[in-house]
Image (tube, rainbow, N blue to C red; front, top):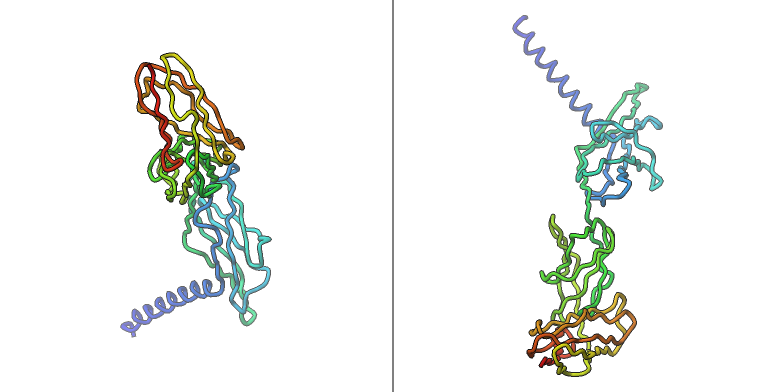
Length: 305
């Protein structure tokens, strides 16, 4: 008889283990928990984030009023409240300390089931879930096409004064407006093409989208300059239509930098013309160049005697 006790004990433990596993999986089958929190959320100034899940009873023996949905986050258990978004949806607002880039959590639901008059507590839970906190979020450009020199806005979140916008890898003049807005001036590139816009920062880069550079006619008067050293003459730039919002920056370059002294050229928004003074520097000759206008480039010969 003693020889049969050990196998019999083993059979009892095997049955108990199987029953435990059955109870665990029965609890999971009796309740479905679906995470509704995005895998990445933008950082907000209050640092409060909403975690939500759909908790759906499936068991016929589920006892109404016994459900207690919870979230376990940073090692603490918090009760979730019914959400106004819909039936079976629960949510919890949690303040995450600054500096965090990710948060880990899981959902837990306790409830009761009743079979043949016997009430039994159950629980179901999810695996560990991770949500990233995005400090930078680029939404889009305000417009997706424009001429050389146009000021183009980019809206998003988490911008810094160190950000630089690149056009097909070429750095553009970038203006930090706020943490939610950047602007860049379309550089002197050939018109009639599409260019990839990227926001470059010390920590990486983020694509923004495709920008179409349109050609724009431009007239310059006079067509050439002949100056004595120290002499000043006016140079006028004319557009056939008004400059866009933000103005139009004319990136004037020269191959005779020691001979030409002139200010930055910007046609104000809504205006069709601007006049700037050009002063002769050291004696020499060369030209002023504007790329992206007319047939591709506007050239103004200049000499200083």
